[in-house]
Image (tube, rainbow, N blue to C red; front, side, top):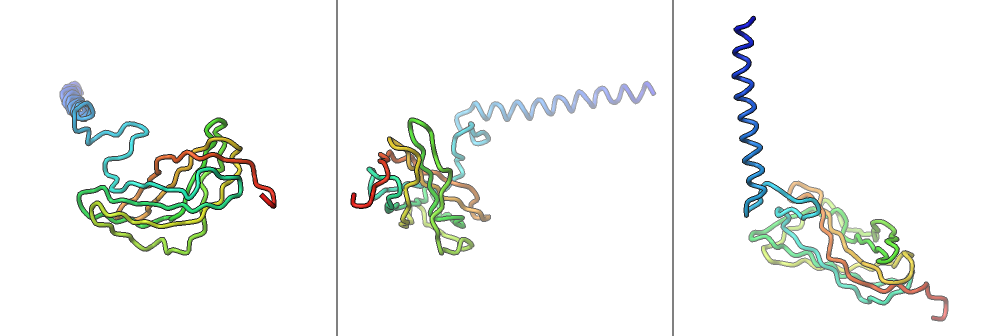
Length: 175
């Protein structure tokens, strides 16, 4: 019985050393210049091959107004990249002062979301949708577009940089 305990002792130490070495290397990689093994919370993954931007037809809008939203999906990877769109028209509006929002909104789309989109390096895909401004309260708000992909080509989601808009009270008939 004593002999077994002596064998387990050195094996346990070897396993602890191995684990310590592996964790130490991973932590050193996080502190290093490349940081390929680590992603800080809130930081987009470096593996994301796309960038999303939006342009609005108007930035002074009333609750209930319909505006044109132009989405720009750009391949920022050095090679071609593909995605399977899981919604072409998603957006969110958040009131800057009150943080009121209506969550993620979808405009009806008749596009087959099982179809893959492949973009050459540095190419941009553009599409336009009409969006209705929800009631998030009057005042300054942030409009952000969203693109999601749900296939093996690239799985993930992108948010555009927020666009500042002024939300006005709902228009009455005749205004």
